[in-house]
View 1: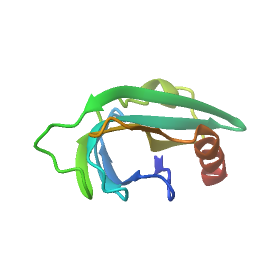
View 2: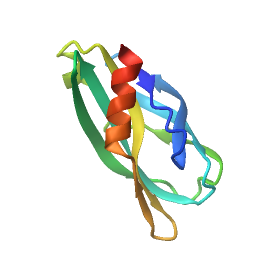
View 3: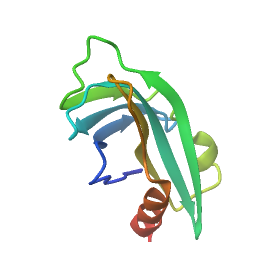
Length: 123
């Protein structure tokens, strides 16, 4: 299990924990944009040889009590890669796929960049 660097993106995963069934339990995110976040969607790329399967989890609302301006923790609801692991991939890389900011603006990860990074990381 790897994490996309997402160096130029507003938010990225810096740490995470997984359950025995490869369910993403939680993750710690860094918010470089410092804009408050209303919801997020995790994504993952399963790499097998030269094939990269991109999947997104459910959109998850961030509780109002969570300060998302710098660093914060999220739950990994809906981010089970069990079906992808059954296909014996070379590797799986998690990333922040989408954000909804409190001001109503939205952001999406550049999937071409994520796909390239996933392929490069597992070679």
